[in-house]
Length: 99
Image 1: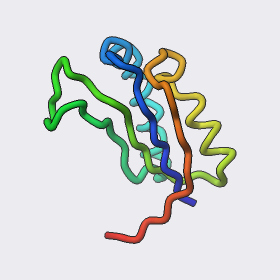
Image 2 (image 1 turned 120 degrees about the vertical axis):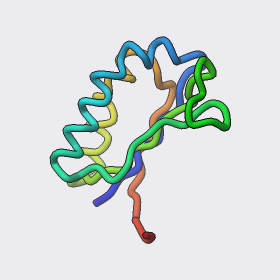
Image 3 (image 1 turned 60 degrees about the horizontal axis):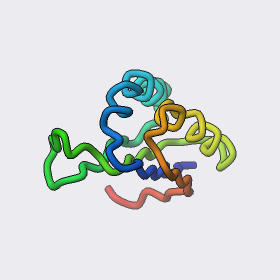
Image 4 (image 1 turned 90 degrees about the vertical axis):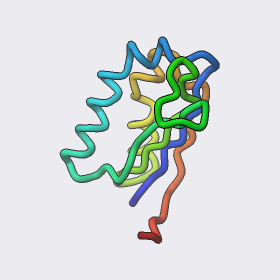
């Protein structure tokens, strides 16, 4: 089943994001190689693909997991959590309808 991992950053998270990003992206690439990643990306803090120093306010990952427990465990192990980037992470089942 698909799950949405919806994460919210702390304020001024950009320096923490930069440091933890390689490990964060590696985990996403692992899901991609396994054919389980549907999409992933951050929410820019401003209306721009490249928000610069404004940074980001959170992230969204949609990926396939066996069950909610597995999805939650994967989310809990994110390097951004260990680095203090995220203040809140919500994991919810997701049903893809379109496209």
